[in-house]
Length: 538
Image (tube, rainbow, N blue to C red; front, side, top):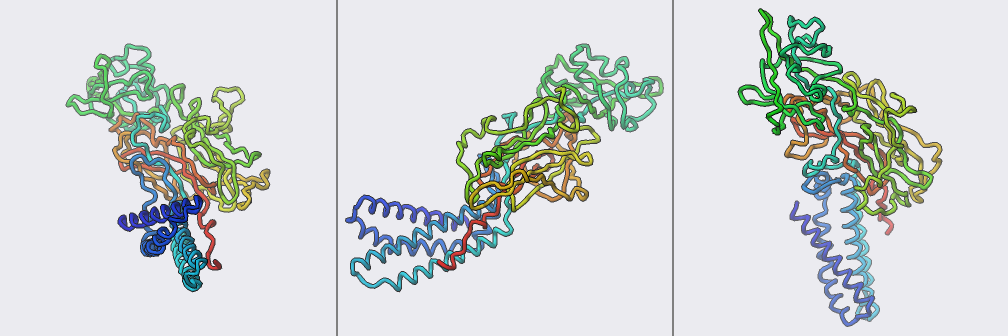
């Protein structure tokens, strides 16, 4: 199939060069070159048409659809299958039309110069052109019916840029604590597994926290929130605390046999802390590995509930969606463009897309502002409220002009504002009657479970999208291989932009097995078949 594609590309390039040379000869009145050019057209253009028609069969269009959404090196946004089919169709149709015009021109010139009667060849050419284009249109329209309209972003080639993703920090994070500190009586008469919900009561002598002499380090490593779901850990080991600026508590835990949990190799050995377990008479005081749910200044766990809308007064609609984090609050951000006739946008300088000023968010605010209210302006994650729905909201009759989050039954839910418009004129209609939509199948959602997740920034392969319907996902800690120090999934902050108006917006999950993955935005464009006009009456 790749060899066929190269032949198609070769033919299109040959046709474009011939058309350009012919245009140059005619525009510069260089008629002395015209006989040779017409001879070349008569000899080669039918061959080009034959090549295009031979290789653009149903198998070709299936190949284009099935291979349009692949994340190669340096690929950022992938076209929707629908768009890829439409773009190839336009290129091939334009090439066939140029061939038709060039050949008809040769018949016209020869007729004018009394070199014969070319009415019949001209009619046959018209019939052949109509048949070829109609055949290709039928192939394309058939594939468009089942083609995805989703536009989404690939992972970057590396994650050296921390702005390429967003982390929820210090949420349900792994901690080490001795059993003696998990109960008010300072006793060691239970198992770690019996501590499903407790807190840090004190710092018993010779326990891990008792060895922390630095007050700042002590406040970083001790959990001052709710301690959940403990389990037994091997007797004694070394702990390498993370840097003060890090959202992690530990870089890694190292056992006496040299094995380690955590994945971070850097450690100042002067700061290593010993975590011992011990026997007190006939009772063993075990080290437990638990999870800390501790809201506070170091924990970014907030989602904005404010709406983000385009400037409909200037006939602008949403053209892109992404995530950002401002003042520790995760927010949706949008790009906007003026809507023009026939499903087109005003042109923009794409070099400015990385500029944050190119994107619009809701008015900046902080959770500490006097007029800001939890549950109205923002949502706070907790162990019992940590779900986000992976919804896609589509309206094929209206265009997207707003996005926002809402919380329903403890789940974060995406909602999309849509506005009526005239496709031919590109004008928004009845703006005041714009409507917020959501996925109404909220009672039938299935949990998408993460299996032994590590940080996806450590993956050598790009994430694979999972586009299932009616799923939700819970934010949780990474696996023990990361010492459960990170909250996954991350949120992909890549700027996803479309060159076509949006019929919908969605959230999806992408990952590789064994990694926590990313939640990301996807855009749903209008069906490209709207722009395909049958050629039967040509």
